[in-house]
Length: 295
Image (cartoon, rainbow, N blue to C red; front, side):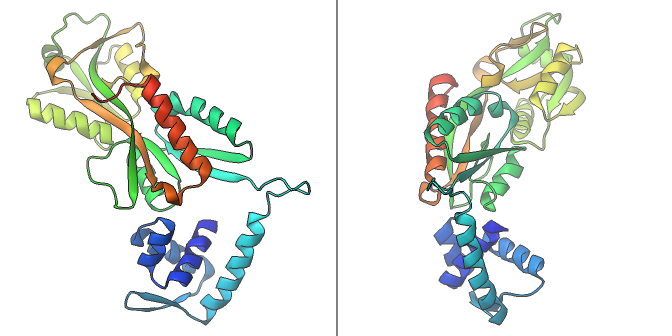
């Protein structure tokens, strides 16, 4: 509700959803969605909409005063009698592989620099997390780069360029990845995910006929299925998976190697708090030193 109230105040000041979005770093669609949620929660309209203009009605004017006072009170909740500064919150979405690699070290350093900062990690798949950033529900998200252009007000910060490997059970003989892919049962990386779409495009470009036995989104589950001898799989070699389990072998695709780009989706830095900007810098520096980069 606090995000909606902040957005409501911006609309009241700017006069249009588009101008309010430019001010606070949201798309016009995200502003409109937040205002619809707020009006639905309150049970009455706040604006007289005339063309592109959103003018406060009588109820909207009353709510504006209450919203400003509520946010002022909320901003002081973290202050103590000793004059300690109010806490700052950073909301971060992340796919599973980055939660197990970069995030713990980056967050540890962030909390050393900003002891008053509270962070929250929201798990999810890339498309879901990107939509939450676009809606203003998250400050940023660590995810797989989407196969389409980002909204104009969103930014991409690259973290890693992860190569795909053919993963096979240790007992499976042979090193010809194409022959193994065509002859062995295949475990597919979920086509609904950004990484799974990359695998699908690769397979279609190579015109393989597969013996598909399973489809899964979680990489750890796919690796375990290969370890248990269910089949072979095309998976990215992530920072969290630098060493494969003893029960599998990873075969290089050679000249046909394709990659999964992982990074941060966030708003322009002028719309972010100082801790959020610092977290982006920390993640970027850690990735540069520890993760595979594009050459």
